[in-house]
Structures are given as structure tokens and as C-alpha cells.
Image 1: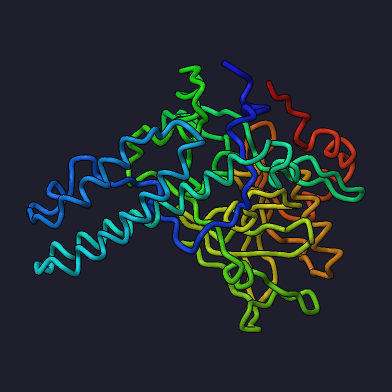
Image 2 (image 1 turned 45 degrees about the horizontal axis):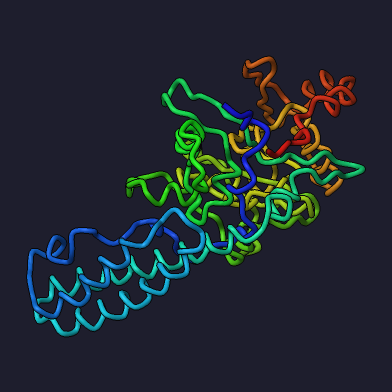
Length: 362
């Protein structure tokens, strides 16, 4: 198997912006191959022309970049015809299903349009890939993790987060990549996926739009964190995880985590200066760590986050809780002890901070 811990083949990548439509939920789903009657348990002579269009659509190869445009054109026509048909059919339940199928056509058309853009240029030109090796004089960025990991707890592969960032639907695709790689097919990865029935319940990560990113941006005044309502931030519920990133522009974004909202939701796949979880009480940090599967910070990056916060005039109490990993083990301590322990090793932290090595393409 190729060393996909360091690279992904050239033709997997594309050059589209990472920002997606407002709702890309299940946008990879396709129209039924068995005809409309299989969906509505209802027949009508007006359904036949639409069925013929759907048959034509599915007869087009899904494995070629050059056929994407033809598929989009037919989907656009099918979408319109389904809406006309929904108005013509008297049965309310059937009409509702037809409108739902029209929505599937619309989302699938959007998804294919994104793939068409994605397959336009080469990996080196993609903004996410170009950003992974940017160097700074004063800070070491955390690139998005892109290495193959087998999770024994879930009995599945994970870790190729570049795929998750580039996928228009931001799905967790590592296991599919492994299967694709083993088949040694010439079909580009995302088009190879088109011939699979990807389950509707496949995990998707939500990427924030500009409004959501603005709402997640916290401001500092005299070292106190304020939210968008200009209130002192209280994010300290025991039953809730609050995740943060510090962007390359030194903006601090904080949000409630969930199954679909993770650090990559805030970063959109680009490198960050820090990532982890924290807790705030009356605007003051009471706990901070480096928990992030997407970025896997080292203890150095927690130290770097602390240094950044100090330069932003955040008053950090000596008893602020710190959690980090050392030799695969969890270490919980206070800020004072953390700094005393690691102040002498900052230079070695820089040397082994996990910065992305040069990757190779074949």
C-alpha cells in the first residue's frame, strides 16, 4: 500500500474552495434506479417521461470527469419535471415524495458541480494543501492530520482528514480510501465513490459558514473573554465540551462541540496555532487542553497557546487546569507546574512539534 500517511495521489485532489452550500446534508444521495413507482407505490402515465429521464441519467458513466456536466444537465431537467409532476398529481402524499426527489436532484447537482470544480487543478494548487507547509518565524502552525490510523475501539481506519476537508459533504472517508487504494483502480477517488451506495447515516462534519464563524469569535477586553452579545463568557458545564482554535491570524474561536461540530468545523481544514478544549468562568480561563483528533497537538502547542494568550493580555491563574499527553499517557496538572516542567524543553518541543514533513506525489 502507498504511504498515505504522507500523501494522497494527485488525481484525488481538486482545487475548489472549502466553503460549501448552506446545507450539504446527504447531498451525495442519488435518484432511485427502479423508477418513481418504487418510491410512491403509485402509477400515473405522466410519470413515464420522468422515469425515462432518470434511466438516461443512470446510463451515463459515473467514473469519468468528462461526464459530470451531462449528469448535472439531466439532473437539472429532472428536478424541474418532478416539480411539474408534483403539481399535476392530485395525491398529497405522492406529491410530497416527488418534491423530495426534486430536492435530491438539486443537492446531487450541487454535489457534482463541486466535484467538477475539484477536479480542475492539481494538489499543489489547492489552498488547503498549500497552507499545510506554511512556515512562521515566531510560531509553529498545527497542520491538519493526514495519516492512516486504525482505531481498535471502532475497528475502522481514520485519520486522512484532508479527504474530509476536500469532500463537498465533509464525510469521514478514510476506510473508503483504503478500499479504493487496495483495488488499484484508475477511477479518481470521489468518482469511484459515486458507484457505491454510501449509507445515508454516514458521519458528516459541519463546516461553519461566515456567519457561524463570526458568532464563534470571542473578543478580549482587559484579559476577559466576551461573546458576541458582549457578555462575559461562561462556558463551564460539566456535561458539555467547549472546543477552541487559535487561527493563524490569532483569532480565538470557541464553540460547543458535538458529533458534527469539531475543530475542523472552525478551521475549515486550514492549519491553526492551537486547538483543544477549554472552560471559561466569568470570562476567565479555568481549564485548557490540547484534545483534538483533527490536529493532535503536542504539549508544545499547549505551551504555544498559553504564550499567545499571554501576549493577548489574558490573565492566566497559576491554578488553571492543564491536560496533555506525554508518551501516550494523560497528564493532568496546573498551569504553574506545567510551565515549570516544560519551560526548559521548549526548544526540543519546537524540534518535535509534529510539523508536517514534505510529502511526495507519484
